[in-house]
Length: 253
Image (cartoon, rainbow, N blue to C red):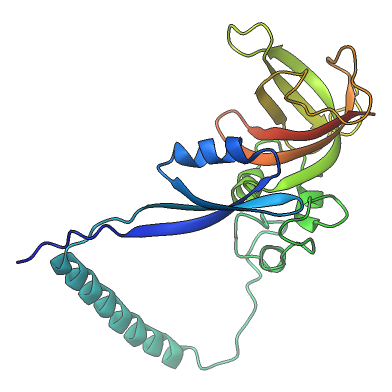
């Protein structure tokens, strides 16, 4: 049998805030992707990536296709049997718990309506409380380890969000002397009142130039500093309940 030596690729397009292209490219290259093209826009650059597609032999493809066909036939038969047994009126599911997670996809009316309603903001727009119902709901969560946070981070990875926040903790990153891990909560700083929303974190950042200060550059920042934050969604670390962000623009309030 003649071997299929032609290398095939899968491609995808991601967007990066102008000036942040190298950081985004580095992140995807670490996952095995290579850059094919970059198309700059007014606010963001569209980056086309590719990587080799998994190689399947023809025998495996035929086996997989046969399995899919068999599953489809079984599904049709089962659906027919269920349809015959449920010809009566459909009743609503009253056993679902109220207030189930909208982003985790649990079967409740609230979850369905929230999960299927996309943000009113355009794809390239900076998400805010005003133009994104999903972000507005995220910033009001009282459970900092909610699965809703992980779901939001996954769906909106690489997008830019903007909100009012404050520094509640700051510590050196490892043994570094000029790079820090900075914990941020929503709203104005309070030593006694717990603020809603995730535990946001800027990780391994230099406060002098990584923050991309807008307006007056402060002499010092620390616990209690109130900020206007525009940042790119990085990822959510579930074991630590930390929502990692990359600074895009920061201003002191």
